[in-house]
Image 1: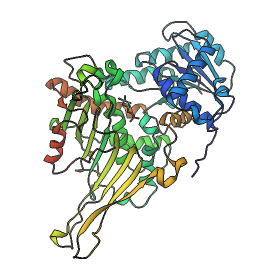
Image 2 (image 1 turned 90 degrees about the horizontal axis):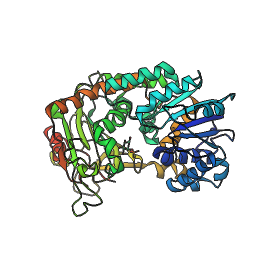
Image 3 (image 1 turned 60 degrees about the horizontal axis):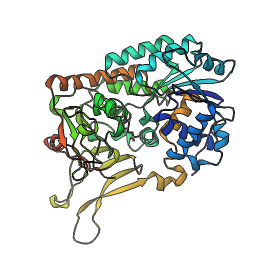
Image 4 (image 1 turned 30 degrees about the vertical axis):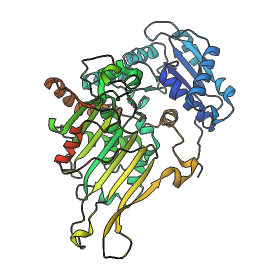
Length: 487
Ligand code: BG6
């Protein structure tokens, strides 16, 4: 199955932070892959903008190396033509250097203008202000803002207000790269493109829902940022919250930006505050015998007294008609046993079993796997084959998308590629709206404040495990268990 590529209109994309890690790893290789796929018109222009002094030739060389290093080189053999689309301007977000030059580059062109803020969040406001001062915040221009979008409700509100001084909401694209993942969008396709699931998608038939985003990586070189954030701010407030919204929201009337975002917002606003005994925080220890390469969290962030969590598990409740009383268990952590992101819907028992007590009884479990090996598994109860009476067994109806759809139908398009193309098309469906981000912080803030007020110390867990034992205990108290974290 070959996917259809619809080319976008000509555009100028300015990447502030164009020499940074995200630009080199994701944005530029992603753009090259879109170019190779025939999605980018020849007239498109990409302008790297950063503090480093270099000329356009130097920038092209840097981008060429980034594409070789971070994937995409084999997408086609037209690298030189792609590099010819690139320019560079050395710029100071807070000073005057480079702005006149950038203004000149952008002048007099009747095409889509996108400014990507791939910089430290402290600079978002400065860039927005400068763009306006230099006449580049026109009605049709768009800005792309990376996470973290604030670190609490107050800072997110302040940032929204600052950006709103210079740009309208329709011009602001807040990225949560989870929304660009193929399978995350598939959640909507599965729910709203099939008759099969939606009638059962409620408190009457669903016992509980689990969302797990497990990572094997540690904090790596991002210790300074991460130690001030922790898993709650880094993963739960945004990525897991978005997954929760997509799995729990009411069907939007249309697949359009505000219809979808209105429904997601209603879910966030219906979330109950989380009780302290429904929360588990953890912090990973060093891998035994491999302390050098896999140090403890505290060593990795170089803060022996750190109380920041690298793992969170919690039980959430959504107070609305559809979900009242159905728990949503969320769990995410670094240095866990496997990299695995999965949403699992566990259905209730059949109301009455017609089979003998010793025949066995199984619940239907629908598991949507986001990464790796994207796919869907549905556990179905059948008769165990063979003679000897009626015994029941649970078998998986297993569909890995790559197998079902063939090599071209798998997850070929990286989240960033898709999201950047959506910005150019002016489609905000997969971006967070101001009220959504603020509502997510309004739910997250009391959790973090509670930990701070109680001086909460995260529970240690072994690298390569499934997190602190307390997370399992929280489930056991409810008579349930976590899904196995498997690669
Ligand atoms: C980022 C977080 O937003 O998402 C990282 O800051 C995390 O800490 C990453 O590792 C996970 O993304 P993915 O796409 O690898 O699941």
